Image (cartoon, rainbow, N blue to C red; front, side, top):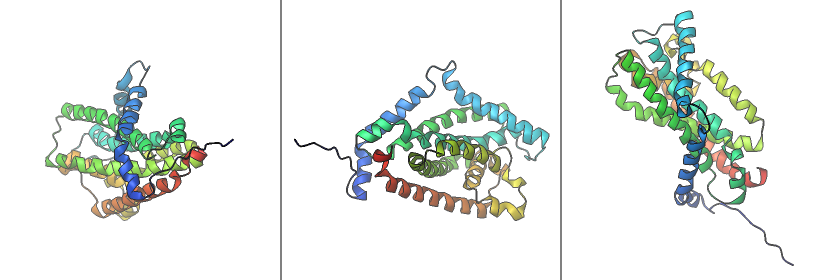
Length: 274
């Protein structure tokens, strides 16, 4: 008696793989929408958590760095300075946490049918972006409270949002692939997020870093992302350290390209390992 064996495989060529992404676009919409619906399901205050968490974090960072450490923010109200840096960081950190576990949480789907696996971590990043948009409304409210009006640079904000997506996708794809093979990363990712908050200019302006250390400090690619957001939102009161910003952009490009390549390399083994 012969036995049938199910073989799950991707397109034979790289071009076919990326065309498959379009064919499976409905799956992408379904996964993103499903995760959005269950994110705050059975919570008392629901989507309000997307406002409460960054608001409390802003208060803590304002007290620690603005009142206790008395770091300079120029003419910018310190809560606005903090929140303008918190927005991209929250998006990035949430995207890392969600995407790193995305393949594990969708084990049944990954192991049974073929589709471009890159859809799974990407859809989880979209969910983090939804939280980002809600938090942006809170920033707008704070700016109205302080009568702070942005200048023409606010129209460049979509460009820096794209840069934040680049960072989230690159890091998310790396961690999603690594977490399938090495389950230790479920414990490492929270540490990365917590440590990254301290070494990134979220609670303070990167301008407080001494000039001789600015270039080295910019090796943290999120420095360029956060500085870009502040430059766009806060206008002339915030300046970009352009040599460091260019270094951050190069590092983010390398992170994204290498993340896609490593994910594609490991993708063939996901169904067997997971």
